[in-house]
Length: 395
Image (tube, rainbow, N blue to C red; front, side, top):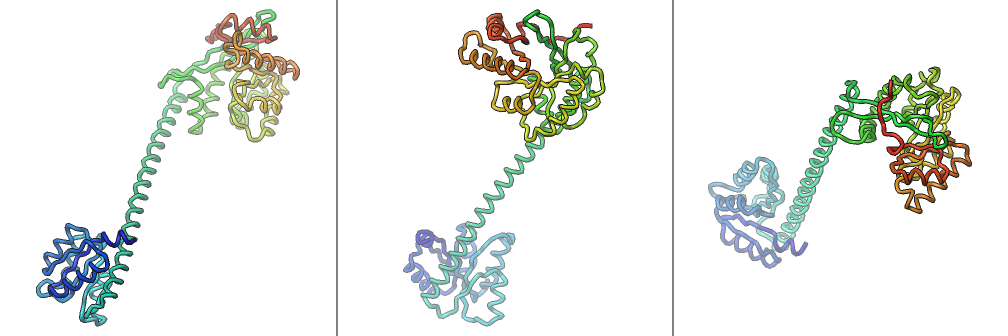
């Protein structure tokens, strides 16, 4: 405060040179170092316009343009938005005089003859108010800037959300925007096709993996709707399935719980369906999902836990949903032939699946060496580019 007090900008406006000299002396002795003076009201206004003073000591009674006129012009030039800490110096301290000065924007007053101690105290008080006003103003400016940034961020996010929504709606509206291909799942014991997985392929831009399309759909509340479009497209080709082969379709817990798939319970295709639940989906309450799954299981449908081994939640899914099929994630099958850690994990999951009575599919098999290693580890069902690439079902 002392440093700020010393550097405060003070203007003394009084047509009496003796009063000016006395005020300058008192304020200088108090430590103020930046004091400007004017014995002419116009000169005082000019000083105020260029120096942005912290305090103005203004004599009310001057010939020509008096202190009241100066106050009026200060308000007029500020457009009503300025904060002028004016202390009026007045010999006449009647209520009417004081009220008029305060109504025109004065903040305080000094009565003549001047008391040096009172002058310093009034000026210090005025500077405290001025500094608090400036601090509050700076805080308001910073807050407004922050609010503007938040508004810009909200508007940007809204534009992005609108873009997401528009893209997904385009996919939902146009049949050609989504196609289904099917990847065979082969039994290594006799090389028969035991099932196929339905995989979505998107024709629209941006060019990206299907999981990103489904994530975007979920972000705008259309995840189950897009899933249903993909499932309907896959089921439309069910008559082309290889004999006895199951059809694996990717299903989120949200879609299962929505009831939109319940129409399949009484459909003959139900006994050939495998619902693949990805381990990356967070499930807070398994009870409703188990209840919903049970209705499909009664008709022969099976549950598979997808991406097992890719994250922390797959074992919880497996323990609480007791799937008929466990899918070994491609992050473990890639390089399993030369990576001891992957090989050990794959081996343990193969044994785990056998112990709990689940079938295991090793997905993402891309080389002969990976296939041979997995076969040696006891994997019975395999899926991947080395086995068969995704393609439309043949008529």
